[in-house]
Image 1 (cartoon, helix red, strand yellow):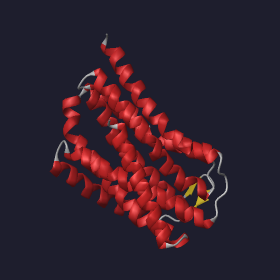
Image 2 (cartoon, one colour):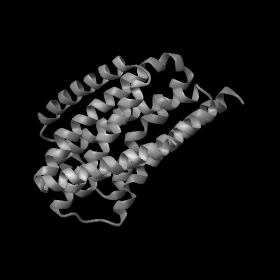
Image 3 (spheres, one colour):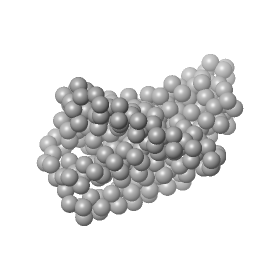
Image 4 (cartoon, one colour):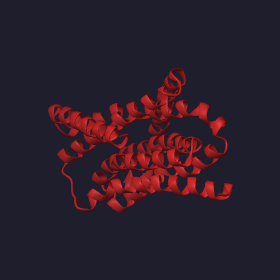
Length: 248
């Protein structure tokens, strides 16, 4: 098999993982309208999914390096705080039909998920460096894992008026760094490997801040703390079970 064929395989499998993210928007093809209370529940579900995904990233990063993973978490935290301050100072922000606070919130979610996808793209490329079978397994696992992440993105966008089709496309957009990063990280696997735990930690730190500061805060404004706590707990349980199942 030629090197060119190998590179195309890496790219195609990584592209499949990106497209799978859009599947998370499909449930919203059947649910078009949302009361304010349901928006709170949607934010709580998204928060639970993102919290669980964050700790999954941290756990994965620790397998490579504890210090680099934790350094990445702190870097991600600092980055998202500075980004939030920068976006807060920008009043004329629009994403589709959204503007103001809602547009800023969606933009931050998109930005965090894109950062997360860079790390996963490196992970795909590094895994192919360990053999094609292992690379295919990791790619398919990430593709399945991306579906609830696409759901988390859609849970933030659709209740705020974005169509499920556009939410799905935005979800796919957040995962496009995966095929873009998979190929170079496969070609220069030893060069990229040390940065993988930093990238995983960075994405986790940013996602945790978003989940607690933005999503849970909004959820508590729209529904009771009991409903929010119950929803987050059940989301964490479901996502944890999902992550364990795809690894076995």
